[in-house]
Length: 226
Image: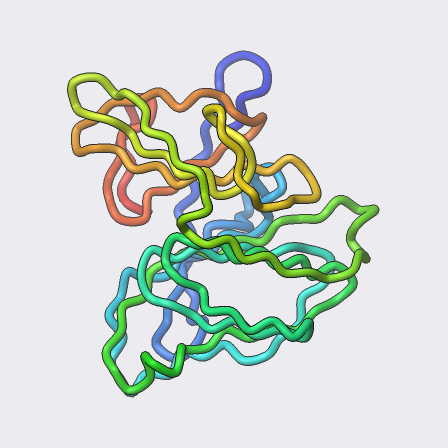
């Protein structure tokens, strides 16, 4: 939704499903015909929640990126990230993996060896972030921030309890994520108690809300999950 000037303009995006690897289906919300981006975010994939059988291979082999940054965030499961910078990093739930492709990088995301041959849960998000034009050809880099190192705030939502906010990227509610970005970027993981009502303040000119599992009511409009 756009918050610039007068009443917010709200656009509903339903996304479309695509097969990423093996039996792993993703819901691609951005880009959409009616909304190419939200702020610096140009790509939004949601996958799961799903229990994958032992024989399913969901490895995403080596593939290139250029001129953007990727950010991966998991609720359940894990990936093993490798890239042409020499990085080898397990992506665990609650952590942030931020890869700046810049002038070019090749990476893969594979099933961790300890999980191969076993049923496994997988649920998460991957977003792409546009780099400013002057940095599109910068040197590639990689950041990993563990879940314990991302700031968290607890906010009052009245009688229904408290709202939990993890600041994954950017600054909000008096705390700042350690993730380094090339332009102002905000990415939050918000958990509301059942039945809670809470006002999300205008923290950016454009804001998007995505609920991976539960229905929401936004400005009196009922929204199904995803």
